[in-house]
Figure 1: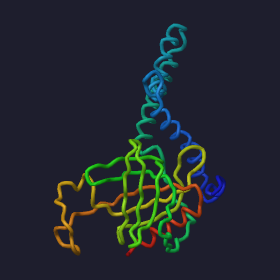
Figure 2: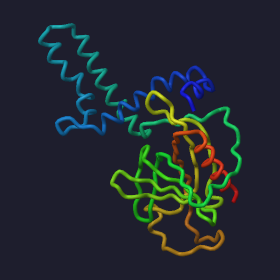
Figure 3: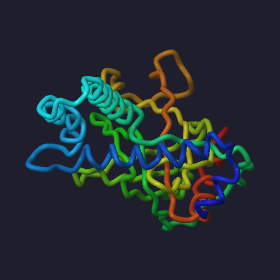
Figure 4: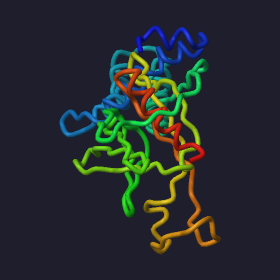
Length: 240
């Protein structure tokens, strides 16, 4: 999917958001995780306006410059906080996306992608961002994502029949070019939040069945054919 294709589908304000917010979020992400002299680059950037205040005083510049620098300092603090809070990216749905046709991935075939969001194991969960991942379908129909976490361990997400609620196509806004992505909302009932529940096998929807929670993760692809294949496979899980 080319860079100009998604922009033509969106309003002027949405295109402007992609052009401005994408590079800003990428800058915040990279400076937060790169270090200089043992300190994240974001720390140097956020305090840079304060370092200029002594030069303003020594040079006897207008006091208005101090207020400008203080305002810039507050703006940088708020900007980094907001970027971290939203996960350094924003998903923009494609308003012209059509419904996906149900598809089945051949046995043994794995689709390469990058995963963003919260992924859980029985007693551990981790929030990942654009991590290398693999998607496949087991013979009995269950869909699986394997995510390579930053600590070199693996996280898994299993999509069972009726667990997938929605599959939306769009773009993850990060960097100069929006990334072709899927937003998958599904029902999760395992992980640290459910660790207090004893491990039983539940039949039907009895009163003792643990409550599930809706969660959204984002899958980013290098090509549209892989996106369409995974979307069709997950669409097949909606409603069983």
